[in-house]
Length: 310
Image (cartoon, rainbow, N blue to C red):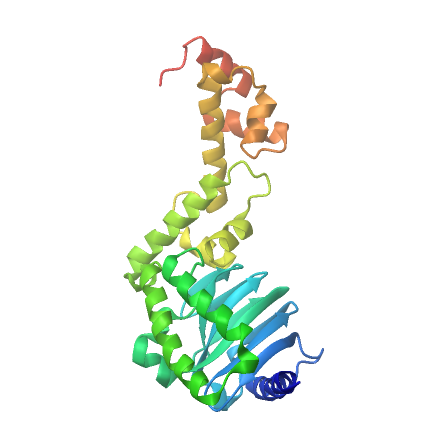
């Protein structure tokens, strides 16, 4: 009974604290439900179930604009823009949101575990908070896994926390975060030109891995690599072909390769086209003829008879 009473007290304290984080109330009511939490003198944490909504830096009450949120995405996904970075957070990933700087976070139906970290405390272990925020910490990395285990234990035993233990845990979390950051990609520290090249490589790799998906589009690619659609268009503005024209070119090249492969001759032309993401045969034939100067059927016949030079 005492343990249940403590849990109720912790929940009420957490509800009060987190309610003060955002200034004003959204016109349609709260988009987040607090499932459990703890709010002591130093350590504040909560598990939230979010309905789809958008949160911006203007929504944060001024007393809380010198803090950050370290979050573990348990279910669903979220999309964050901060410090010129765009990232998609999937289930199992951690992310740091700097409440002291401008940001935009779009949350879909999701469940998230969140711990509140004062910036001053965080900087002792992570001096460059700006470089750590809005960076995906993928859950499959070993040092990120250590942080996840810590979260599991803290949240599972939140109702049993004492102030002294909670204080020690709060002091440990920034150092656990620093260890996790060491194993994540350091691309965001690269010079702008190198960073752009890195993003282009990520985009092309993702697109090549999903060429067979007929629904592949700029929005899908952006979500897959954690970049906004508008940034994708800007990223490829200096290329000869737009991103989706490049995707079409890659698909056509894969089809041509299959037409030249004797072991693939049992596949019909339509099967080859569909396997590389073309859903409309008339459109595929027009595109193929436009690029290679001959119909798909004619190209395959010529290739199998050795007419085309490679």
